[in-house]
Length: 372
Figure 1 (cartoon, rainbow, N blue to C red):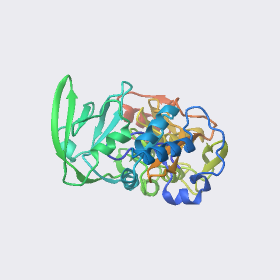
Figure 2 (figure 1 turned 180 degrees about the vertical axis):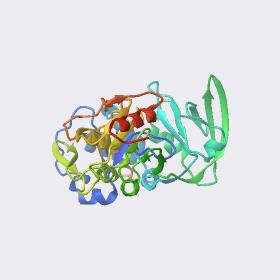
Figure 3 (figure 1 turned 135 degrees about the horizontal axis):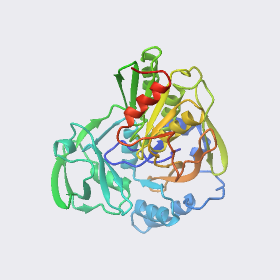
Figure 4 (figure 1 turned 60 degrees about the vertical axis):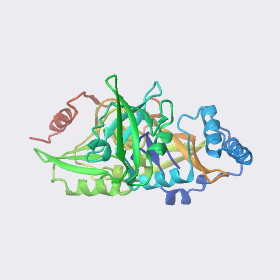
C-alpha cells in the first residue's frame, strides 16, 4: 500500500509506500472481492481494469487507457506504471536508480521544474540547477505530463544519451547527458557546537529508519538532535515508523483508513524520549516525512521549526491490471496521533522560520538547555 509516489529517482512527487513484504502480509493489498463504496476523488479499480482490458482487445495501449480512466476520476495521486516503470519504482526504494540525477516537480501551471540536482551526477556536470524549466526529453514535450511519465522518459540504460531541452531565465538551453547508475545516501549526520547532532533524512528508502536510530544512539550524551526533514518527499512507511521509533517509547505514530477500515501504526518501544529534539520542515516535506513530523509533534516529542509542509496525506494501494501494468489508486487518508488529517493542509510548524532555519533550531534547543 502506498501513501504517495516515490521521490528518489530522476523526478519526484510525494510518497510514503509499503514494501512488497508488508503488502503481502496485508490482505487489503489484494483486490477485494467486494468493492466498498468509494469517496470523491478516487478511481474505481474495476472500471480501470475494464478500460485496460478493452484497450488491449482493440490493440491499444492498456496503460494509456488506465491513466485516462484515473484522470477522469479526479484521483490526484493515482498513477499507472508499466512493468518496467514499476520495477524502476521498486529499485528506487533501495535508493538506487539509473538516471541523470535531477529531481523534478510539476508546477501549478502544469510545467515541469527542476527541484534539485544530485551532486556529481550527469545533470550536475551539465550545469543543470534548481529552478530550470524542463520543456522536453528526447523531443517529447513534458509540460502537463504527470511526474511519473517524466520519470519514464528520463529512465533508460546506463550509458545511453538523453537530450534535455530547458528554459532558464527566459533563455532556451539544450543539454545532452548520459544516464548513469546513481545512488543516494538517505541519512547523513554532522555535529554542531554544544553537542548538537544534525540528522538529515533525504528520503525514507530502505534502511533509513535504522540509520536514524544508529545516529541517535551515537549522538553525544546529553546533546540535542535536529532532525532535518526539509525536502524529504517520502518513502517507505515502515522506514518512517522506524525513524519515529528512535524518539518514542512505543505508542501511536499514525492512523489510516483503507476504504473506511481504520488501522494504526505504532512505534517500537525503547526509543530515546529525553533528548531535546527539533524537526526541521518546509514545503518539500511530504507524505511519510509529514507522518513522522506529525507524530513527534502531537506526542510532544519535538518542536517543529520551519515552514508549512506540503500536505500529502492520502493512501494509495497497488492493483495489477490485465496487461501486467500496475495502478496505484487512492483508497483513504491517514491522521496524526492527535487526529489531524494533513491531506491538503500540511503541518504548521511550532516556530516559523525562513532562510535561517538551522539557526532557529539551535536557538530552540538553547531554550531547552542544549547548545553552546
